[in-house]
Image 1: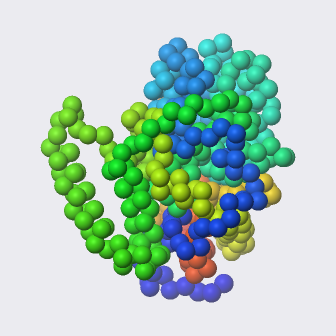
Image 2: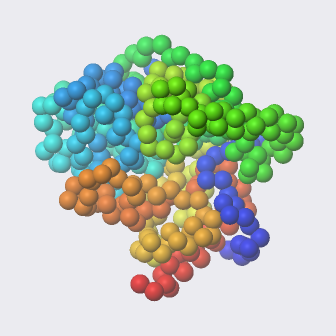
Length: 406
């Protein structure tokens, strides 16, 4: 493997998420089924908003219970509470698959819905869970936030649930975006726009992310003045909002999910995704997204072979999977985190923060996954030099973490 001089690269030397590039657009054909191939699709602003809308469509309300995997993002819980329902957590196996026996034990009469997650872009077999939900008259919400593309034994992601939700901004170079889809139910066409401020922020946010990573240099030069004016205007808006009372403060220009928050703002329910994001979804080269993510995943796995202190979460990359990230299990996670952070390596620590009260007694596997798992970027916009730097930096961090004092 070529050596990379890390001292010549800035912090966060590679994009942690897809950013716009000249190669981002092309054929809509993906090679794998996509969530928005479903018969009924609503493009909304985030996956968590889609969760709330899916639960509402199932009639979830006060007095009801929703079963949620104990290994989860905290952003999955507020939509349940918005509906007035309570959450009960069920266990997962060490490979993140549903512990069906635990779901069966918790399938009480008050359970109105079950949420099941395809973690990290690896589709699960949900046939047994679907049958269990049907037997107990509970709805199934398929959480495809990590899994916009994929299938398991010919069953497309999103096709098993009554409703499925996605987080399109994990797979496409956009600032905001999610979707609610269904293969079983119609979705009312009642989404409203969120205003000119939101539309401008969504477009400029995506462009700025691209410019910040050195992409689209000609467009960056042309957009310099508008972006400067946007910065001045945005500073004034934030200053005005800081002086406003809670009662008079205006809604945010973009959903909190775009800033990595876990909160749920009901203002964004029934709001459609921005025109810019919808155009990107229509025009993106989906075959490129799937092919490159799979290739980058396998390339990184090979590059880390023989490095100490880690193992992949999944033994193999199935043909039907399009990975969100490369999930790595570390033997010494605290030491590895410190060294990856110091090197500027982007990482996802999914499940490191679980909902209060979820502990080893609830699900030991979930706590262990949250402590040990690192998600490394494999998205389609990583260049060859960025991938080489990533692999070299992770190998070095792994070696240093194992050599550090216990």
